[in-house]
Image (cartoon, rainbow, N blue to C red):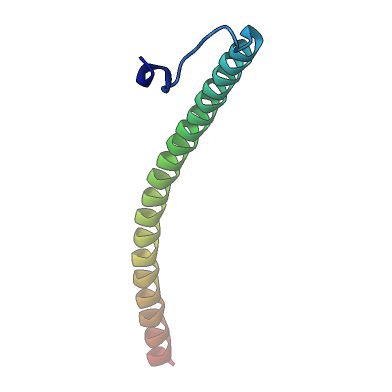
Length: 86
């Protein structure tokens, strides 16, 4: 019988207000964690949109660089043609 009394137990010596306050604090922690989780989800969604936008911008930049190369080639050709015409 002595071994059973050594473990943790709940009896009338623990005030009801203490139990109530621990439950309220636990509820507050759960509420806070839910708020943090929702903010993290929003940030992750925004990051996904930014990554998609960055990929599109990189593709557009590649196309612009290619067109610029063509324009530079045309300008060089025009300069040579004008130089030969003199």
